[in-house]
Image 1 (spheres, one colour):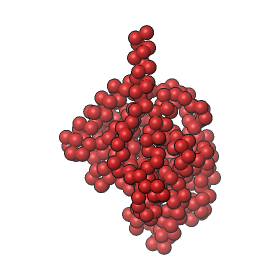
Image 2 (cartoon, one colour):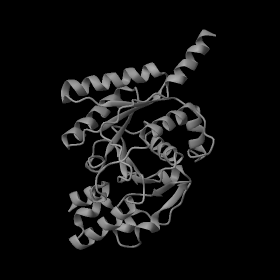
Image 3 (tube, rainbow, N blue to C red):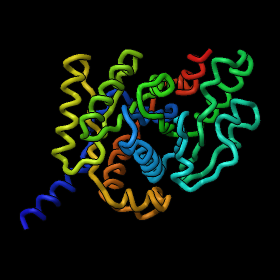
Image 4 (cartoon, rainbow, N blue to C red):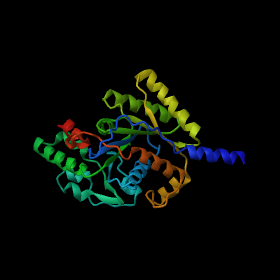
Length: 292
């Protein structure tokens, strides 16, 4: 009985996320908030977190643009069982318009699939680049949140997206190798000027294990980089994630496991916040400005 009570207490605590969001200002009518979901290594559940966070925000009446920004292995459409006709590379190549690629993955969640192609921006002439900037910026203005599933690691493509995001949600696990790679990503992001890094510790066996993993990461970050990261979520192991993933049903209505509930709490913390800046200074405005 005591063991069962302890497990229930852990489940109750597992939905806790840090309430402080200093980099996001309450500003009704502000521009689209961009969140890059990133990880120092693969296999930590980053894409699943991005998917469920997008749907959780949509469940709160937010309009969400979910962008597959993994240039090496764009796979969100596979996880959702979707076969899109176009992706972002077709827009960059001028083969279709920006709205032609969008797929409604769930009510309120619109997927921009297969981001391969954006790496070609450096080779596009100024006129074409400006047209792309206008197209993507206009698209962004129609949404409350832009959720980007970036690739894993610290390559230039990953950090190129993450450096312009309003918030980087760093997904890690308690595994020592994940901790080391998470620190490497934080270091690169700090060097590139984006210190708005939040941490979600995924695949934990208990809340205590998640907190311990975060504290070990934060201790190293503070010791060497002098600016702490913040703990936003602890996500416990959940068999329902594996079950729904195999059925390509991560966004299934009624998913009620502890993982899904914890991400829903994270979404509630993020909802209601926006950025008090002109739309032109949104994610795509910065991305295309940096590419030119």
